[in-house]
Length: 244
Ligand code: 1GP
Image (tube, rainbow, N blue to C red; front, side):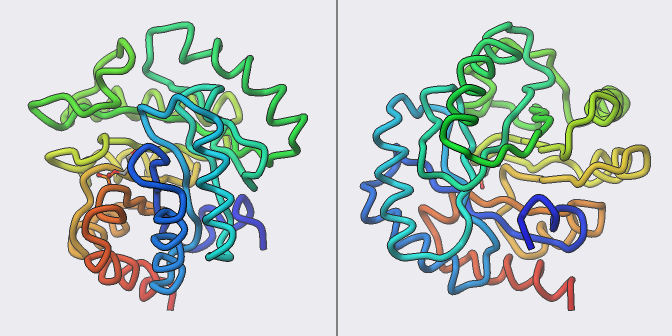
């Protein structure tokens, strides 16, 4: 089954690899381990990516070592590479800048069509959980949603559903001090039927279990994948055991 058909049907785990953080060969090695541990897809992207070539070379090496589907997680049209299988084609819902709501998307859409990358229309919502802003929070001017702004987050989620997006990515930012709160995930799950992807600051199996209990459909890990990969297995096991 294709990734877009599995979203929301079973719990999944996605591993995020930032092409800026290591050489492409190393990314391939990391992806191989993610597959062995049972992750469902490799996301490729990051807030600082500037060169398409780096994304392309990283995916090329990932594909040599790993059979999982690759999903672009772009910060701009420049991060769209022809050899990816999917793209989270994102509406950065709470950005206040044209560039991130439409500008980059207009440049990216023609590449996605030309290279036949499968778009997954995604609402991307940045939640500010940490005292120190995470990198993604510093990249665009935001309509800030704090961890206790549950109603505001629910409003954005409803909007995402009404305009026909296929999933909602709740992002606390890479290495966030705290992940997106369980109450917020639960409140959104109660009001909208979109599959929920949750990432940022999920560091332990227990945290992952709580996010899934609250309604997360996909757990994303980035920094653990790159810095502490042995800790990933326990988290993926929580996701897999949930389905069995
Ligand atoms: C960041 O949600 C992802 O975009 C993953 O966050 O690096 O904290 O796992 P972490």
